[in-house]
Image (tube, rainbow over all chains, first blue to last red):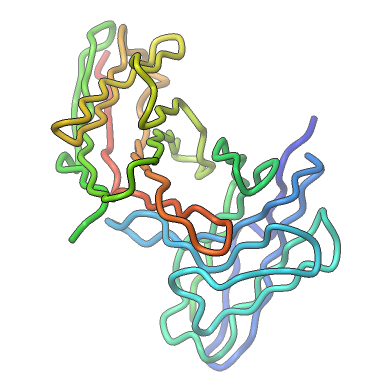
Length: 113
Length: 117
């Protein structure tokens, strides 16, 4: 079955550490996205990528970094510069940038300890 | 100003009854699209239904229909014959604008629906 796999499901980070969230898709989708979800708020776009080796900042990119070296993979690094990283992170993909029927992963819950 | 507003943080509905989840939006772009997603407690977002701004008829997908009132800028989701498995968070979203070939998608804050047996 095709889909998006996010790992790990739960992640704990110490203050000052960088952590990387994995997102892999086998749907052959060109476009991939990272969203952050906080309680009582909608999803906010962190980064998106429309094609391999290209990515763009979303609304809340500060303190985050991404790479898109392979079509299937779009890892998100939460750096120590992100002051409030505790949140639920969702990765999504779509066939291309014009398609809005996104497929989402099951998310990673990041907690700072 | 909020681009997508969902005014109902939580709602209850009796099993087998219909329920309407409200969504209003704000955009100056003549071309836009409206979506609804379902988020069960497991966390993944599930696409339910889509309505384009130029679509003449309201979108329907099985038990889901989108009540699109363009003049009122509302895009309410109607779930008919509610089932226990419909208990989840529901998000309204809109795509509009155009920045470098990417049309931005904005999500509302969600409505938590609980279906009562």
